[in-house]
Image 1 (tube, rainbow, N blue to C red):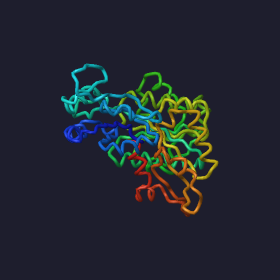
Image 2: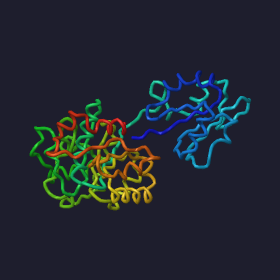
Image 3: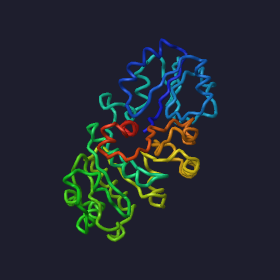
Image 4: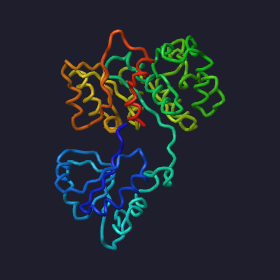
Length: 342
């Protein structure tokens, strides 16, 4: 996932040097920490729109911040003795910045808040079959990073057995598992062991019939993911969304902090992507893109779409015969996507 940006701007290179090491060790890896000391580079930087979650800036440089920048919080570095909720005394060094930022920005070692289970939503604008491959391969790569992962499918008609572990092939979920889903959502977690199968990562075996046959929908799986997230027994939960954008999916994506979008490079796919971003600002702010299928000889409209966003994490070429999941993982395909969402 594209990381949130913390930008420190000061023309005092000695000050920046004195705080850089401590901040780099203390700020959580969920944030990208950037420093600017050169006034000329600052003008070039602000010449392009950026989304800056936290701007820490020297008081005399405040006028340089242009209106095309999207800034969340602003803290002002001052040499005076003034006190304020957004003022940082230069004489307090890195500790002054750390105190104002608060625990949510810090590593655990620096007294930061513990990060709970993350949910990653996988959607597709084209090639719905590749959506399943993406979700399964992403789950595998996350587990290769040492994460405890749960994969969930919100498709009405499910078929993931070819991608799961050997011992899981052929197993299906039925009425017993459907009842366990309802119980877990309602707070009774005793059915969790009945519901979950284990392989390289944990997963719910595909249901033998449509989800709707058991009185369930995509919204049911989204609620299940939230219920399991609160238990904090997994590091990551990967949800494969149904193809298309039903009301349940849109509602879920508007709350999601980590979205993986599979899109082709053709103009129609980019037009659909633009419509998605225009209608759901949260998706644009919290997504990464996987370009598939990618053809080097074809026009890359997706690359043009991404010029100012920098959210494409992988371009994957279609190969014939199609690579197996094992081949994809062995060749480190989707590794960069896994790195991006962590």
